[in-house]
Image 1 (cartoon, rainbow, N blue to C red):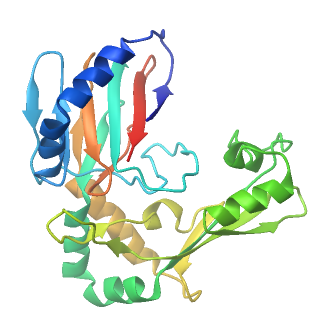
Image 2: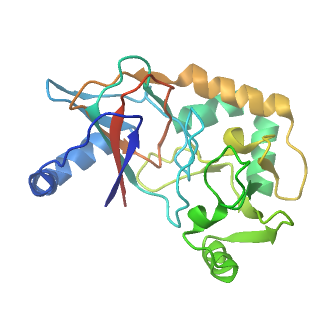
Image 3: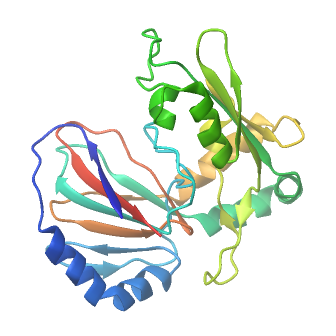
Length: 273
């Protein structure tokens, strides 16, 4: 398990890691049951413990999109669980929206059955353009060197290949990555056979630095993508953070994101299999 932080300010402090891990291991079966029983998430706080049902789902964790556009590191495997801990709650905003991903698939199938099945059959292709760290004009603040953890182009290509990506080097020192085909939905073991909305179509389609098309190059109608985004928003539940809150998410069955907030905000994030 590796922990990082979603931080907009505020102090930092080291928790009792050993005690936390001991508690998690001692109660692992209980936690797994509560997370998995609803294909959703388990929420605990310093004041109360509550189980959230099937109507709770969240943003995208495939690699992964966040509501306010923050970029996550490249990963080779999809984390099975995402754990969040609120050390410093924001004074305003900063909620974590949750969406059950199977509900997005169900509603998309109701409205666009032929399009959903066509894209699942063809697969999706994603492209993303990352500038060089030397590109001081970039507003992203993160180049391909940071994304791949190396400044050596040959090594970056090797790491991209290990992630299933093709690369095209650009004249300005940046790189375009190509990933696909990837299915629109997926069915994971132990989740009631439901088709999960497991893609980054909404996050990457038609953006300045990214695109999402059918794997054969066919353009995806913007109206379809917009409606999918609306469905995700309509199905989302906003979780407002309190100090000490812990969320354990089934990453294969839920989408999650983050709303903009005023500082300070410090939410620690860990992913694990």
